[in-house]
Image 1 (spheres, one colour):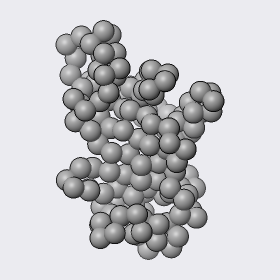
Image 2 (image 1 turned 180 degrees about the vertical axis):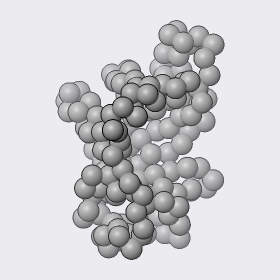
Image 3 (image 1 turned 90 degrees about the horizontal axis):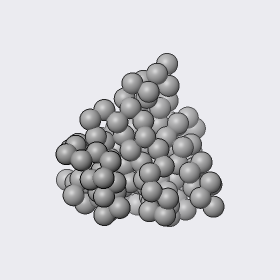
Length: 150
């Protein structure tokens, strides 16, 4: 099970590396309908195509959110921005132990369609990903991300 969860997380990560901004008119109707049903009255700030999937970026109660759907409108992932202090204790303890004195610049919580929760934290130019039962599952620097996107 842990292997499946990690593979799913990496597949979402790799999809994110190859996204492109698109216009709402180019988003399939089932995706638009699913978004409107889940988030009535919320305006999408940006649509992106990620492989065969579609991501909507939006603010909800002044908090950055994004949600990824397949072309049929099934939600695959929902990501919510967090304050660094809102990260779970095990994540904060990792940084206290391994990167003492370093400041977390950005943080988020992603929930996959199967309920798997992944936390992300950015410190300097490196992004770290964690899961509750596993701990650190991945880290990547901005340079590595740019190299993969070539």
